[in-house]
Each structure stands twice: as structure tokens, then as C-alpha cells.
Image 1 (cartoon, rainbow, N blue to C red):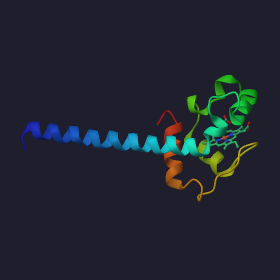
Image 2: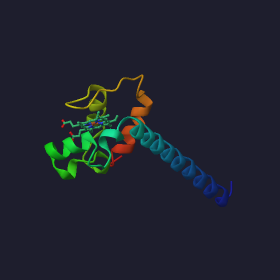
Image 3: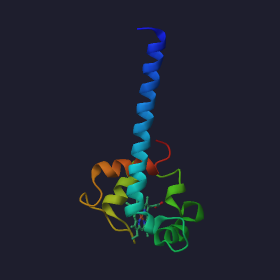
Image 4: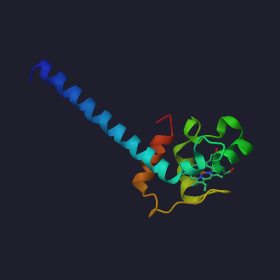
Length: 109
Ligand code: HEC
């Protein structure tokens, strides 16, 4: 194989991988929009955002903007719920959808 052909394959590989990452994020964004944003969007009327602002402070209010949320913490909360937040069953948010949601919300990944 020539060097050009190898470079072309490498480039194609990168495109495929970046396409998969983008698809993962768009699923995560969709799941967030369907199940979380009503309570967690950046709005003075969203109950989750209001409560987190009061209990944690304004910099923690909008979960989409946070860099401190971890994979395990989000999974625990989504499956078990917490004061004012319902838990979500696998029939509502599947494990695969939860994976995408976590990738979308955890900024360090
Ligand atoms: C019915 C409203 C509601 C929905 C829907 C909801 N939440 Fe929440 N969420 C809350 C409330 C209220 C809190 C604050 C609980 C508290 O103060 O302990 C919260 C807290 C959180 C926290 C904790 C933040 C922290 O720093 O403690 C995370 C993470 C979170 N929600 C993620 C989600 C995700 C992901 C979804 C969608 C799958 C979701 N929530 C759906 C109401 C909601």
C-alpha cells in the first residue's frame, strides 16, 4: 500500500470515529430534551434549575453547563431519583440511552 493510501485510510477512520461521537452526543441531547430539560433547562421556571440554584448556588443551577458532574453520580440520580426528581426506569430511559446521556452531560469524557 502506498503512503497516500495509508493516509487516506487513516483519515477515513478518523471521520468514522468523529461521526460516531457526534451521533452519540445527539442521542444524549435528545434524551436530555425528552426527559430532563423540562426541569433542568436554563430558565427561571424550571423546577430543577430553581432548586439547585437555591441549594447549591447559581453556578450549579444549570446541569448542562456544569463540569463537575461525574458519570456514576448522574447514573445513580437518574435510576434512583432524589428530592423533587423522579427516578427513571429502563423502559423510559434504556441503558444505552443513559450511556449517551452521560456522555452528553459529563464534560471530561
Ligand atoms: C420533575 C423534575 C425533574 C426531572 C424531570 C429531572 N430532574 Fe434532575 N433534579 C430535579 C430536582 C428538583 C433536583 C434537585 C434535587 C436536590 O436539590 O437535591 C435535581 C437534581 C439533579 C442532579 C443533581 C445535581 C447536584 O449537583 O446535586 C442531576 C445530576 C440531575 N438532576 C440530572 C437529571 C437528569 C439527567 C434528568 C433526566 C434524565 C433529570 N435530572 C430529570 C428535578 C428533575
